[in-house]
Amino acid sequence: MDKAKKVIFTLSLLLLIPLVGLLIPSKVNATQFHFESYSLAKEDVVDEDIYIVADEIRIDGIVHGDVIAIGDSIQLNGTVVGDVYLIGSKIDVQASIYGITFLFGNNSTVEGLLAENTYIFSSFLNYNADTGKNLFAFFLESSINGSVGGNLRAFGSKSVIDAFVNKDLLVLAGQYSIEEEKVVGEIFDKVKTQEIAVEQGVEPSKEITPSWETNVIMAFVGFLSMLLVGFILIFVAPVKSYAIKEKISGSSGEFFTSLAVGFVVLVLVPFPLVVLLLTVIGAPAAIMLLGALLFIFTFGRIWVEMTFGNEVLGLFGIKEYRPYKSLLTGRFISTLIYLIPVVGTLYSMILGTVALGAILRMKKGHYDIATEQSKEYKKKVVAKKSKKSTTKK
Image 1 (tube, rainbow, N blue to C red):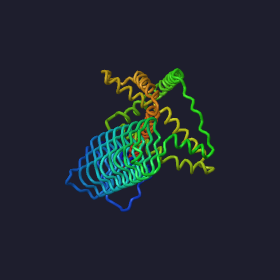
Image 2: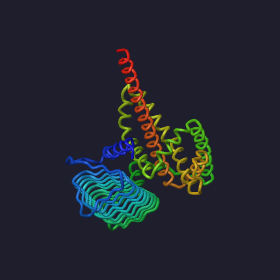
Image 3: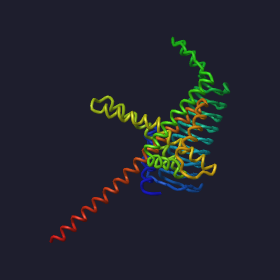
Image 4: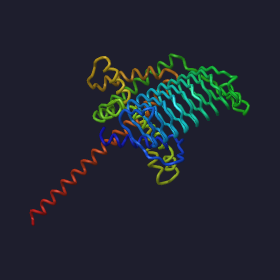
């Protein structure tokens, strides 16, 4: 891994702490960084914080500091005294964690003891752990068992909740089942929250469900309009389009790195933007920056769809880089996914976040190259002047 990538990975990991806004360190630990497949044996003990970016990550031993890891497959089986932040495709936790737990994954299985608050964002979640405090879960489908020492807040499409909840349960899901006798506090679902709103004088708005014909027409219009914009962007910036693609699928870790960087920016940027908007001098700059971010988040998804389409074509034996055909394929797949409730929204957010991270990483790479070229040019100028000075003497 070259120096630029290591810098980006390191900054991404360091920013995950203030990004989530959950980490309040009680002591200062030394730090380890790992950028290759990492494994900690059961008999090993680490007295430092561990930052890991790798495809395969497995921790069976004891970590007295924090664990911050980004990878394709993450398995945490040991004991972590500090906080845990995991971002990956497949996450398996069967550990004792005495700090805060934060998971962001596609397929997550969670068991063991989680002493503090737990935050999980996962497409598919199988939860069977014991959480000492509150549990926040955002998912497409979930099975939540075990126990929750505080409040349980569950948001998603489908959920089966069979956990012991010591306080209140808030569930907002399309389909769900609850073992009510296991909930000590109150249960709040969509019906209950609407009743509270009515009691406070707020009449619930009538939902108008569009017909399937309307959804299909809107999807078709969106497909054609974004496809046209994509063709224009690729035609105008072919080199940048390829560079962005490489920041998404250049290697197995590129996608998650771009996702992490985009996630960091989306969480960290709003506060300084608000501060700038409140100042007379900074307001114009804040508006321009906000506009740029909205443009990238909205239209940057085109490059991600192009990359996905290129990968799909590769599965059918088309290995060459064909941007227009790739975009057509990716746009078609995305349009179908957008028609699925909840899934389409989550998919769109992920695409926008990845696009933002990939574009910023691409710009950073170009800036590093330009800086190096400038330094080389200055060296040549200085050497040339020195040579002329020596010749005159």
